[in-house]
Length: 138
Ligand code: FES
Image (cartoon, rainbow, N blue to C red; front, side):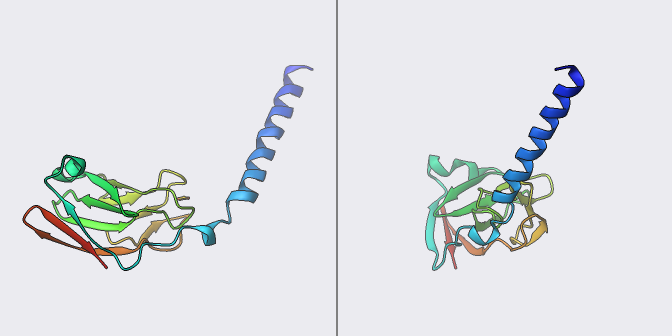
């Protein structure tokens, strides 16, 4: 086998794998996890477990929800699971948005889709600060 034949076979194999992977994974939007409903819980902002929320840009995952402190210092909460295939979204200070590292979908701070492949918004939850308690609720 010469170099050209090898590259041709490897290239075909890689393309085939991508195609087969896409067949099994590119149409799973309907399988994305359900968003948390009837939400009402409190995050202790004084707890070391929640220390990321002390800083602008920090975020935590709790109860299927990502709670973030935005670059402007406001708390926000949206469903954790990307509406495409369920990967955990991350808050990004650059762009002040949520980002899915799985396929690159981006969502606004209200959970609206900015860029796909996700087509459905993340659920947005209410937040209220009282002392060192942050209430997250539907
Ligand atoms: S899981 Fe595909 S973009 Fe989030």
